Length: 140
Image 1 (tube, helix red, strand yellow):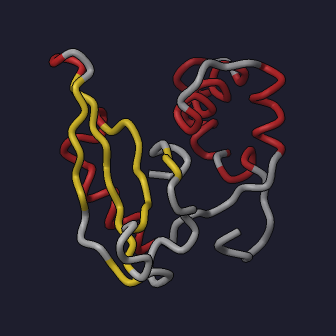
Image 2 (cartoon, rainbow, N blue to C red):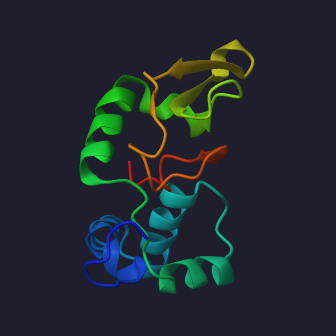
């Protein structure tokens, strides 16, 4: 876990967002399903959703990292398929972030946006190497 302020479950962490959706749709179950789908980008299975809401919320990114990535993806947020952290096969001392975009208009064609690389272990420490992250997982 990145930040060890006070342990809260996902329900507590996303409570304000659930409340906003509840005010719009009038159903707590639907509001929770909307938040779950937004964060996990998968179909709602009630047992899985309830389990996720009771799990401890994990901050993967620092606030500054979140703010930077939010600004970078803002113009094409809806096209982001996933964000990936990797390391070079020829230089394990350098790491990089790739943002993979999908263009539904061009037959699911994928574009990538490579951010400047950085010294291993200095940035995005909460992200695992060689793993795809949905924007919801990173609280973006």
